[in-house]
Image (cartoon, rainbow, N blue to C red; front, side, top):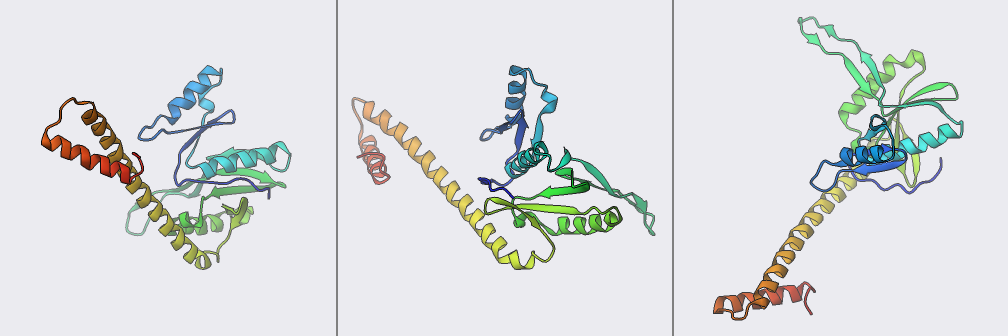
Amino acid sequence: MNKQNLVYAKGKQVFYINGVSFENSKNARDGLTKATNYALENSLNPNDIIKFDSRVERDRFVYLSKLQEEGKISNLTYHFVLRVQNEFTNCNGDLIPAINYESDFCYLDNGIKVVEDTKGSAYFIDEYFLTLKKIFDKVFKEKNIYLRVVLPSNGEWKEWKFGEVKKSQKLIKKQREKINEFKKATHLRDIEQKKIDRLKVRYSVLIAKNKLNKRERERLEEIKNYLKEKGVLL
């Protein structure tokens, strides 16, 4: 497998067309709008925009597309829906809905059909997915098809297989802790930065005033000391 620079954020939705990616801005769902505008500006069909649920899925598509260009795989499709089990009525008379699975990718590898699910980490392989994979592999066994799970690993793509869950639990726990720590640290930094921005504005207002009352002078001194402590003022 070819090595790549693989850096991913959990659940970062990506809109992709003509080799260009677009993502939602902070606190805005404008990724599709940006992709659509790009398509129209470049005489492309907006219907050709592909939505990926994460950057890792987008990167896997780029990787597989390159393999197809090189003739190593063929018939590459994405978001292909397969019927795993038909609906039925159980012995209690309840209608049990059908089970459908939307694969990330399907393609032919040396004439063998591959159905693939790309995960950013083993952390995202939950019990529901494991159950679905067991059913899928059983149903499609006679057709020589199974659900292949692919993960990025040290700059490469690695196939995940049953039996790896237990030995990766410690790693998964560490990843979860790191994600939570990162979120907490980011949240605290954002709060502090907003406070600094507010105080900088207030500091500028007070400095600009010709005459300050006692409370304003005290407040100005408090703000000055805080900003100096944070390295904003010398």
